Image (tube, rainbow, N blue to C red; front, side, top):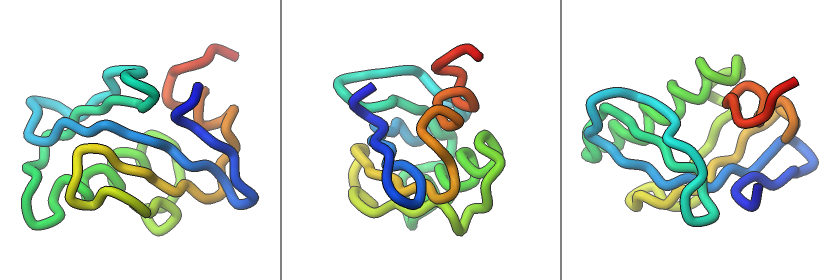
Length: 98
């Protein structure tokens, strides 16, 4: 899983985002990134806020622990996720079974 890297404080997650979709959902691995669909439009930071909200709910961590550190105006993004291990992240995203 090249799109998730462990850090001292949590994980880095590489994404490809399709904003303006019909629903918020994880599509799956795509081109060394995790592809997701977000229903918010890609304007005025709405999609970025929706990404933080989506992962906060999905992972059970606060929005303040999720930062977009690269790609705020691009469909390719790098997220910093604090206080979550790579294994827990994979489990909560449904990418690995217990």
